[in-house]
Image (tube, rainbow, N blue to C red):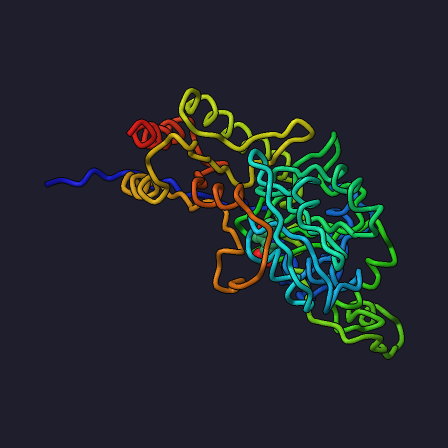
Amino acid sequence: MTVEAVQQIPVMVPWIGDEEQAAVAEVLASGWIAQGPQVRAFEQEFASSVSSIEGVAVSSCTAALELALRLCGVGRGHHVIVPSFSFIATANAVRHVSAQPVFADVDQLTGCLTADTIADALTDQTVAVIVVHQAGVPADVDAIHELVDPLGIVVIEDAACAAGSTYRGQPVGAGSLLAAWSFHPRKLLTTGEGGMLTSSSGALAAHGRRLREHGMSLSAAERHAADHPIREDYLDVGFNMRMTDLQAAIGRVQLMRIPEIVRRRREVRDWYAEELDGLPVQLVGDPEYGTTNVQSLWLRLLPRVTAEVPSLMAALAERGISARFGIMAAHLQAAYAGVAHVPLPVTEELTNRSLILPVHHRLERADVTRVVSVIREAVRG
Ligand SMILES: *Cc1c(COP(=O)(O)O)cnc(C)c1O
């Protein structure tokens, strides 16, 4: 018996080139490898790329979300509305500040919270909402502000996946009070690990910079740059959420790649859309008010499809195609067992009846044809 050698199709490949390697080598040679001038430059360049004023680089998006909640004074006794349909870090950040996540449902087409689903989850103790731009699909943030601003509830944007996505003709997060970004390799641009908090408020950003570095009044880099010894003060109990200059140097190069990364991913999405046309599936795409960067390409099996996601995943794996289960639902995890929530029918349907397909810059049309041929067989029974 012969086994045909099939080329594997990975679900994601980060786009890293010689330029990133050169940038890291330069930082290594400089002798300053922790948070320093590269981080400062990356903060400014990233903030400007998303039309924000301030950037505070941190060690992860989870850290950025926790920082955002602390900067808003969220803590014990407070409720924070979050989607259950998100990577668990969104809900965990709320727990990290000792507040209570309250799960709201999402829209079936975007996978994002809406003003309607948030309205169902409001309580007397709600002080904040974390709106996730899920898998890079922008949420309708204006409608959410309209609902919650009069109630004094703050909106924090979880834009972990959304660099390069747009909302009403502007970058996602443009002008927002607080938006959190991830640079994990599974996201659109990467620094290995890393995150950023962007803000329209200079005061919040300054406080954020202090909290990320042990509550110090002056950063290590500022003291190093001074021409005479200065002693720092510790103004509050802070954290070590620092990014390194090695990471920031990679991020600065990655930032220049965003338009090309997004263009390629959207092209691959269009190929999928053409090949899947007529099948009983729903492919994630642009909402009417914005554009997605196609960070993750999720596909929902319509109710009339009898095939289940695990068997479809197995069929794909057999053909050397790496897919992922649909976006998780935090309320179904042991870590959140017993947390009361409103009914979440769309979340439960999406998490059980969708899967994530390969999308990256190396994918060719023939690869998409190969993936879709397996799906076609499965959904036709
Ligand atoms: C990945 C992700 C995070 C966490 O990002 P890290 O940088 O790994 O901490 C948070 N929220 C969402 C929606 C994510 O997809």
